[in-house]
Length: 292
Image 1 (cartoon, one colour):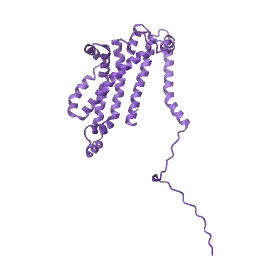
Image 2 (tube, rainbow, N blue to C red):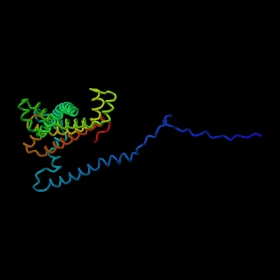
Image 3 (cartoon, rainbow, N blue to C red):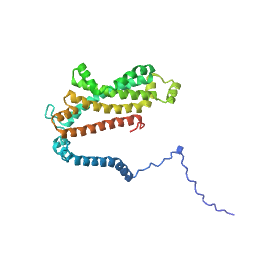
Image 4 (cartoon, rainbow, N blue to C red):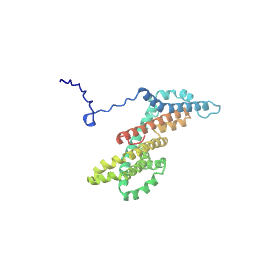
């Protein structure tokens, strides 16, 4: 008797991680992206619009001492739309004043970063250094930035190095403190693994200490760059020359309040950009472990 065999369906292939199975990549809808952007952008824009409206209303009242935003736009229009003019001497646009200030900040902050990180590593790893230097640093860091200016002028006898020194002495303390805290908070598991594989000397610092302390270090750098920008504005008011601080002081002597307001807006935007820049570098170096 002939038995007709029925065709049997082949079993479905079962994919396993070892056989090259691929997980589907989630696709974020365009609407979700737009909603996320709107949720981040709209609140500050709305609050800014409300503040400008209140400022405009207050500035138009009889006896108001500060100009309204519309008056700032009208009276300082040339300064706003043309920040690149250069008529020689100190008669320059805000771009050149900001460039001079940023150059001083970059030089002073770079020195502070190198000295601060190196000193913080020393204090964080040496109990003797911490006990000897920490009380001195705690006293020095409480001295206001401008209090250092007369001494720096007496020592360097020039405005440029004096301003750079004020930036350095102002921004170095948070870098030292945060770096030393980061070194002291290296997880014990990391130290144990380094001891097991006999990782010592420079290799221990580069592969264990610095990566673990990097979030703390960049937190100190963010605080330091903000203090640097604050210090240079105040120092330039006294040392003169090209710089945004001198521009504000010169506008005050000329009773030009609208130019002062425009300059302060630029100062705030540049300070925000500097903070975001250091934060971005910190996230790249720490691979996202650093908080925003």
